[in-house]
Length: 192
Image (cartoon, rainbow, N blue to C red):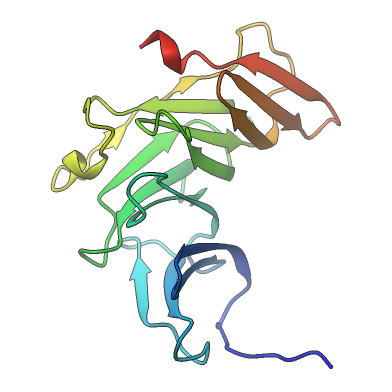
C-alpha cells in the first residue's frame, strides 16, 4: 500500500534533509518550508518567503559545515536567482544572488571549500560565486541583502550553455547539459 502524508498547496520541486528531524522543501509558489518529521507532515513547522516574489523555487542545497544555511535556486521576475537562507534566524533570505540565465536547476556548495557556491542555469551555464569571507561562512552577508555577481565556472569556448545538473568532486566538475552532453571541467577552487 502507498501511504500519503502531508500536504503542500503547490508542486514540491526539491527536498533536502536539514537534520535528523527537519526536512526542507521548495515549491512552485516560491516558498521554502521546514517540516518537523517527528510531528508528521500535515503542516510545515515554518514557511519562509522571498519578499514580494511568488516565482518558483526549483532546488536547494545545504552548506556542508553549517547545516542551518541553505542555498535555494529558482527564478525571479526578470532572471535566475539564488538565495542564501539562515534557518536559525528570520523569515527572509540573508541575500539574493542575481545571475544571468532563465532558471537555476541545481545549486550546491563545494563540499570541501564551501565558500564556493555553484549553480546550474538554463542559459548561462555553470556559475560560481565565492564568498569573500575566509571563514567559509555566508552569514556575513546578513543585513546587506545585496545582490552579488557570479562568474562562469565553464571555459569560454564551451558551446553548450544549458546546464541542467552537475556534480562536484575534489578537483573536477561534471556538468550535464540539455543537449545530452556530459562535460568535465577542472575545479579551480584550490587556486584561491
